[in-house]
Structures are given as C-alpha cells and as structure tokens.
Length: 111
Image (cartoon, rainbow, N blue to C red; front, top):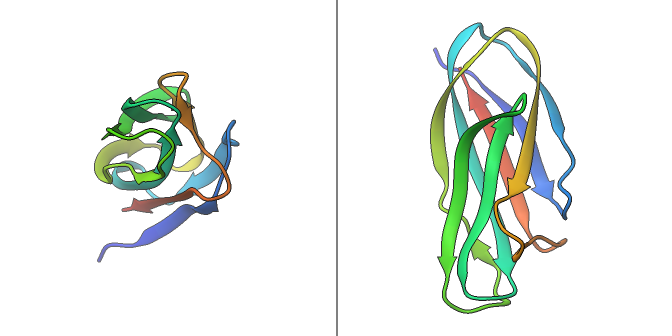
C-alpha cells in the first residue's frame, strides 16, 4: 500500500526557504510538485527543484503576458532517497521569475 508525506503546502516568496523533510523509505519514491509564480516579462518562467543540492526537476510554463500569476505545469518525478532527513530547495532559473504571497506550493512524497 502506498503512503504519502506532505513535504510542504502553503504560500511563499523569494527567496523560497529550504524545506527539510524525512524520507520514510530507502529507495525509489515519487515526488509530486505543484507551484505558481509570475514574471515581469513574457517568456519561460519557473524553478529548478533540488533535493540535497541535486536537480531533480524543472517546473515551468511559458508566460505570454507579463505580470500574471500562472500555475507551473505539475510533475510527478521518480526520486531515489535514503531513509532520513533531506532538504528540498527551489531556484528560479531566470531573473524574471517572481513569487509573492499570492503564489502557492505543494510538494508531496509518495512511497
């Protein structure tokens, strides 16, 4: 039977604080990622998602219109983790990705 741990759910701003979580599994898990953001110009906006400093995914969307909050394309990413504590961080991949209190995030680990 699968189990899930909510790593983070809430709103945020940049810089997004690192999120510490405990993996209950030693091996392959699935990481569900969902977030929103906006950009001050048209173009690709979003984040690189890192676990323990290693990139595991890129959440992104093409913003045709600047200054509009958009949902980044959600992803389910396979990750191999050891049992114990880990850190998830978000890094905007360009200078025009913006997050404020109106943006939401949810990260869930399924194992």
